[in-house]
Length: 112
Image (cartoon, rainbow, N blue to C red; front, side, top):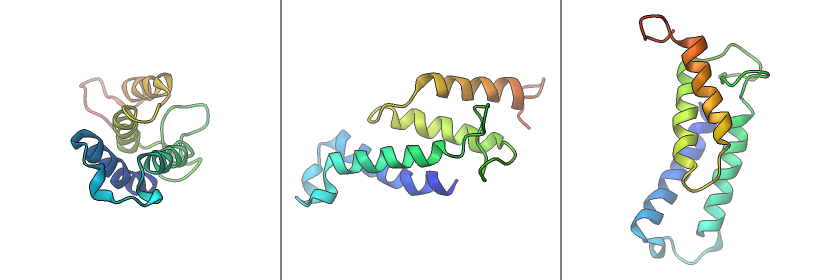
């Protein structure tokens, strides 16, 4: 969760500036450039992926601990949004969705 909260503001700034073509409001500094923000998003994605459970496509708050349904769903949503600007492995996202359906969803459609 902490890693997602670190990268989401960067993503939302990038998304806003890209969708409005308002990069001029960031100034000319190199650390504000589209390439630098994309680099920071990629670093954030790498950090988020480090919380993926081994041999599963679920995510945990702590490395190598119990899977979290809500965190896995948040990671899928977040990485799915970021894929518009920074390539994310679609097979990995699909497998996380399958994990949510097959391992975390109850028969009545609710999630545990």
